[in-house]
View 1 (cartoon, rainbow, N blue to C red):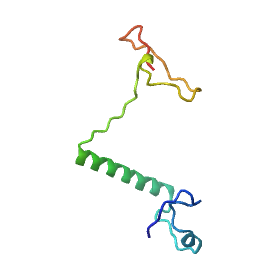
View 2: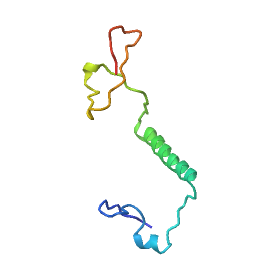
View 3: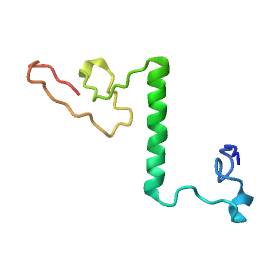
View 4: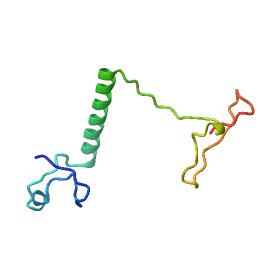
Length: 95
């Protein structure tokens, strides 16, 4: 059964309302753990296929930048970046 995503509808992206009401819809995953494992499989499969097919490399690392770089621009006005001075670069403050 295909679904159409319509953000103007209260249940956009879910099976049609008549299917939900008539009891014609049955969840494929019976508990939260099965659902989370299935989502993780989808995510890792997509990532692996992207890496293989278009030569992507996943990079995960915190980004530390100098204050003058402008990358941490404090857009929300409330949060402040953590600031520190690296041991090997005295006088340099990173965020």
